[in-house]
Amino acid sequence: MTLDVCVRALSAPAAAVIEEMTYTITPVSVNVQAGIVVGEITGMRVVERVAKSTGGTVSPARLTGTLTLTNTSASQSVRLVAGKIQYLDDQWQPIELDGSRTEATFAFTTYGSERLDPGQQAVVQAVDVVFPAEALKAKKLKGLRLKIAYILSPYREEAISFAVSLDRRPTSS
Image: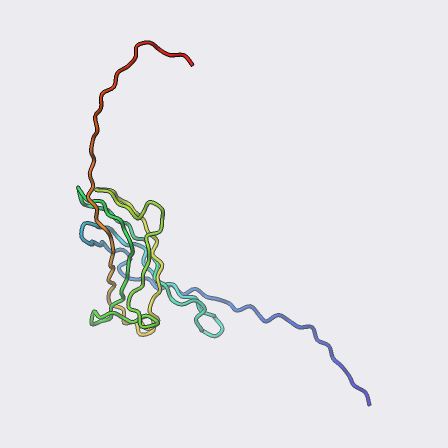
């Protein structure tokens, strides 16, 4: 009895081709206002990564954009805490995210961007938050709601005057 053995080299599985699907949100930029904080969110789009061969999701959909803010107050500083985005359906009701959540949150993390003094402009915050898969599939997204949490504090400048004199004789070291 003979036993023939065939040895084959193990081959690595073929690398999956990943395709990035980009969906533009119209309008691409919107002016926003929350109390004394005004600004603009620009470059809004939804990006999802899928395997080309199977069509399966590799990376869930995310909303990206850029938020620029200005403090319009003359006497209050603003400390920006967090931002929240709600996705709204055709009835202007929140669309549920995974896990029964209805808000996608982000923090103002860039050093110095969390504080706006009176009249200060151009705080730029990259927005990159989860996007509801349901809204992408059903194409039922009709609106966005941006909530900005901030803390107000009085802004004061005070001057202190004190007496000094100049000794007319220079000293040498």
